[in-house]
Image (cartoon, rainbow, N blue to C red; front, side, top):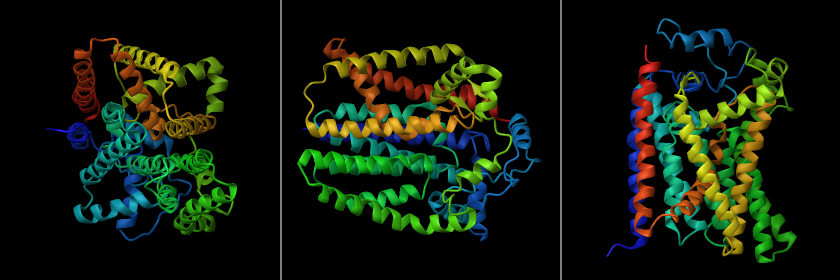
Length: 436
């Protein structure tokens, strides 16, 4: 007889395989360079593969007018993308992993895109492990969380491009899983979390929130187990010392190039990307109401699907249906919050970690938009595990309104529909609107 554990793993395998198939289709059929910032990430890899070493972001690496022409004309082959190098400030891990593929397959983009798809599959496994560790007796919550992450069309599109997003989310997910297990008092050692955090530091600044989440995990475990502050300090050292040792060579290198006050090269990046729309300019032009309304609308739309370089917008009826789905799921989640009284202290501590990750990611998104107009929902993807769990709890709560025999088929139909929607977006909008 099949055990519940085997059944949940079988469902997980189906979700992951389906995601990989859809992701591979996105990777193969999305026209060249029609994933945001893809040429700049590709040029970083090319620099390493051609033996020119780690690139340095410099004035001239970003040309707003030329980039606008490229996107408007759909990247014609006679217009080179070699000058787009505004991602040269990024940490090196993704590019080091991608370079062997470039050397093996030449300048072909598809193998690099498929590498991102493989990282995306890893994200799903990390999300499943995290939620199963929090709710071991409710595998359906982990499966629904994974299915939502797997089939958000915009997330599939971004995870099928040449960029460091998927690897960053994968490492953040692995760190989160390790921290959840750590809070339970079993399994992982703090030095392992430190190693994962070191890799996070070498991947992308959008997931640096995990540094604070790791500190919070130590504080939560100290409280749950009644440990001393001396113990907590030792644990923090075991977490942060390995992380800093791993990241230190890169940070020192950056400090020597960009200045000791800019070890992440963010100030240099902000100075280089001249011409990128600034929030202060939009505020002066549209006022607070116009700015906030545009921010809310565009962020929501691009969280679900606004493809290419934000130029392919779905019909409004699609966003209205997605908004209705979001509202219903949110109401279900709020009802779960009102009635969730049987959680253990360990579960509550783990959920605090997820809440912290979501809050810090949201604050980082808002902070970025205080300087630049970047109303892109993809910047919330580092928090997809807490977002997905909230949605899963909401869906589970709403499904209880149905007769018991209909709950499972209804949930399966919902996520099957979302997977079909991915294919619909690819063949109805991405391919026809972005190809030359």
